[in-house]
Length: 219
Ligand SMILES: C[S@@+](CC[C@H](N)C(=O)[O-])C[C@H]1O[C@@H](n2cnc3c(N)ncnc32)[C@H](O)[C@@H]1O
Image 1 (cartoon, rainbow, N blue to C red):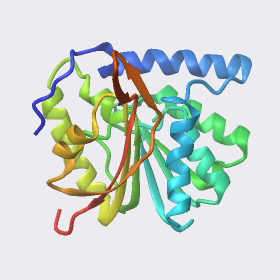
Image 2: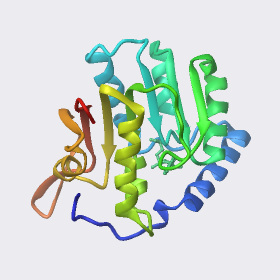
Image 3: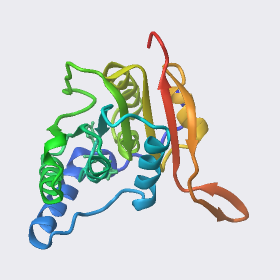
Image 4: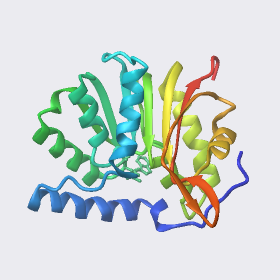
């Protein structure tokens, strides 16, 4: 397991996300504003383009872990993906995602569920693809038991992903090496998506890391 730890933050608490999505749901109801796309539209587009370019079949079952407003699933549904599931532990996030799916006319192909990925999520089917944009980051900032929760995340992921299934993660907290350290026992890296680089104090780096893993046999 990684030695890296982050300063605990309210971003790692359910209370924070409840407040965020209570506000975003109200804004959507009042003004029709769909709310924030985490790490910007480019991050979402990169993940979608990769799935499309690698010819991941439209019938593949896809799970978006911590779906928030569900915009990633909306865009996948518009591309023709038919078996889409989004989970989030915030009731208002799922209500917002549901409302946006209805507005965009894609409700049919998107299954949404309020559940805690680390605790209460039960599924009788395993998924071909799991997506995460910012959720492992949130888990990593938990003020209590962050290291234990990260381990639980990897276990839950192993349970819900089919053998050889794909896991695509976009993170702003972890570098490629740090993500590898945490996932490589059960997953092998298959790709790194190009992300915009930033330069600070003469050092070049990336504001986000986007990796694709494949579940190892027997994990
Ligand atoms: C940074 S936001 C990203 C939301 C969305 N993936 C996006 O890209 O817009 C993190 C999301 O993870 C959800 N989340 C955090 N921990 C979770 C858990 N244990 N189970 C389910 N959802 C969780 C939060 O409610 C929030 O919607």
